[in-house]
Length: 223
Image (cartoon, rainbow, N blue to C red):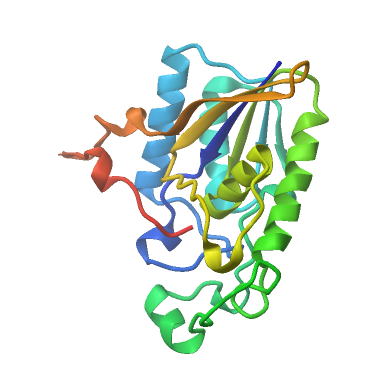
């Protein structure tokens, strides 16, 4: 039996600046570090352990993984296959800048590049499939995957056998900052089970400085 926990990174500097981050390398904010620490402390209380941590090498994911791993103490690997989507010419632009300089096309097939020169839906799907294959080549055990909203959504597609559709139609799997999903895979039955999705309960009473922040104040939509 495999158990996979799919975790999105904490809030990054690119998030609070409303940027299309993609594979640009933004660090965590102070709040993002606190989010990751709150999750690590929760997992410590729950005595939840992992046999290995696989992380995107981008700072916001790597830093999240490192904070969590202070309590887990598992072997940690960085793998470019778990990095965020290459957003092409959108990379690093604010949403306002992007609307003027790289406006979205009226219709986008899964095979066309995103941001004119980036990874299209099909390319990202194939990379997510490669990442999934790596996960299932590991010995049976418990694994933490630390990545990004766009990639994790496509990894859910790969797990569930959902093909990318034109113009981003179809189901969406929205991971918020330090939201995580927990799944198991039974190799005998080829059966996936989803036990949690976008779990954010560790953020409910997060205290940063003099302010107590509710869940709604802790998350952003930028990838």
